[in-house]
Image 1 (cartoon, rainbow, N blue to C red):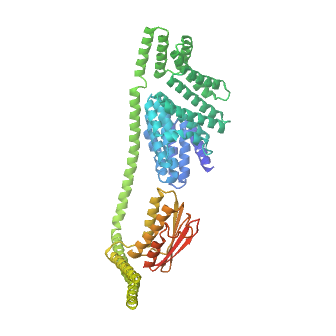
Image 2: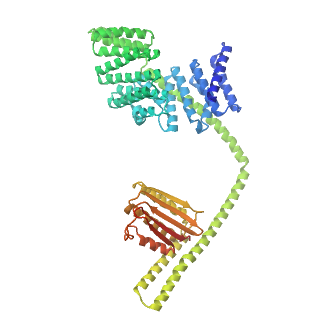
Image 3: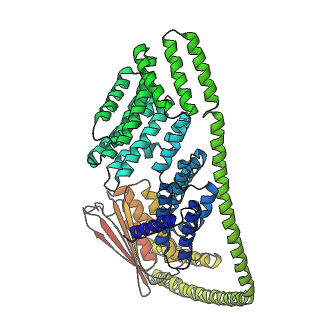
Length: 617
């Protein structure tokens, strides 16, 4: 509500100002008004949002009363607007508005090259903000290409945006799509369809024709009471039917499109302004149709009507069209010499109309618009460079402070490193005591038992196994001392997460890892490798043997004890099959070697869970 109030107020003040200063230049008054808005914005009297909305409304008012700027003038006038729009992502919509204002001004003043350039920029912003193309920009581009008979460029435009374009009917059906947006979708489809048929691409042309039909039916069903919307969509769709008929040389289809448009001419629901467009289109296309069909009587009638239509607007290109069609009519009547003279005259007119020279002018205007916009950006960059220079001066002025802070930071880092080193040494000493002590003590007990009871194969095997385990512990401690890498619980979790992500790419399942840890704890290489192997074993068995779709892992720390729980929601196993597939003996052995505890819970047929508890080393 506030936006509309401000827009109305500004427009009222503007036109009141014009009435009081009728002798002054209107453009100067408009510039003064915009500068006044800029001053109020910089002075804090207007928020960014209100400023942007007010400038937009004001520019639309100026266009409505034919206040026209050159591209360079408009860039200068809108520079404060541009800076505000680009200052935050919350104004992304206003970036599109900026380029639409520049494009509209170029279109209204006949600067096709500029219009095309800003349509391209509009499309870039739309893709950056929403990830998809702009309907408005694509409509401007395709219309420009078709007007210049560059149907191959319209075809390329369609192919680059095919998925988006063919999805427009579905977008039009959404409740969030407004009436103008739905009608614009129909118009874009028709423009691209015209280009495709003009390029001889009937396969894609038919796809777009079907999409245009669906979008038109959507406008008819969603906005039945909005006559201009329905009529405009229908007329656009009927013209596309004609372009298909012309492309495939189908006289019945052409007559069908003529009948549909004539019905529109007779309808009270068709706005008068649209009837003028329909009448002109029918006259031109019927004349061309009857010339191709060599119907001399109908040709004469429509040639006269066509000549009368073009006399209203003595444009060179219109005269070329008239003479060209007259030439074809004369040829059909067998008056070959007159037909040849008329065609030569038409060609001479074409050379002075919108041909290669005109296209080159448009390309030059496109390049000029690009250059002028870049000049604005360079000026901004220069101002930014000046601001950076001022910042550097401040940095230099505070150099001593920064150096002092840097030295203090280095000292603190060294203190932290020293603390970590001490912590590491204490951790290693604790690990040596906790891991090698029990292992060696157990080995000593086995040896004593060996002396007391004598030789036993089972006892010998147990001694060997314990010695192997002790060697593994010592190797792990040696690895910890030589390696620069410190293992931790978080590192273990990260590695397991990476394994599950890779497996998820080829197996359909979900997983979760719950961490309830007070802090990241260092653990020995020995414990790290055993825990990793145990959990890899669990994951592998789930994938190979369990019909599951979910894995859950949790890591909890209670004082100095780590509890790990692994679950899947597969079947589990039937009684007597505990050793099959899940490798419980291997898991049990590794837990035992770490002096830990474990518990297996079989929930057959709804999966199983393994709980493991170990002291953190």
